[in-house]
Amino acid sequence: MRKIVAFGASSSKKSINKKLADYAASQIKDSKVNLLDLNDFEMPIYSIDFEKENGIPKQAYQFKKELSSANGIIISFAEHNGAYTAAFKNIFDWISRIEKIVWYNKPMFLMATSDGSRGAITVLKMAHDRISKGGQLDIPSFSLPDFLQNFDSKLGIINIDLKNEFNSCIKSFEKKI
Image 1 (cartoon, rainbow, N blue to C red):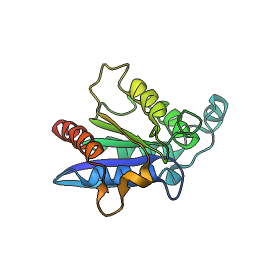
Image 2: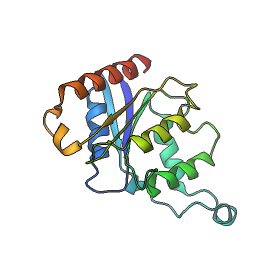
Image 3: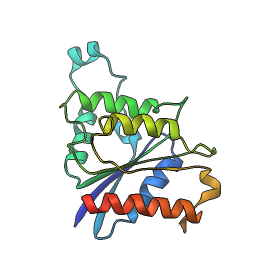
Image 4: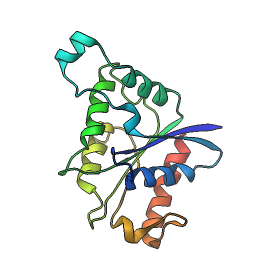
């Protein structure tokens, strides 16, 4: 059975990105989903001075352990001022100090959503460019605009065109895991 690690890159307790990540992971047949909550990995804001004095926090090692045990990783990005949330960026900074290959070259599916019509596309493009190493890695990505109109907690993505686009991305991801 394949293990999927999924999370919404947000610290919101009612994160729509966490809901989307969970939904995406649930679409993978014959898999066990580990849905992470970034609040469980809260750490001091990264600084070289803190690291020199205190080392890398245990939460960073725990997060990396979750990633290392996965067959695939799904992330749905929330957008704060056109960029990553502070919660995600801090975890990303800390785990990048453990080893250079942050995501273990695992198959990934990157998504983003928001209540707006752009669907957090700016942060998704930023994340995709960074994680795919400027397009060197084939990582499917999907943006869901207008989350409240296009997603139902029981039905999933309800807009047929967006659902078809999502299905194409999830199939591409599933083939790699």
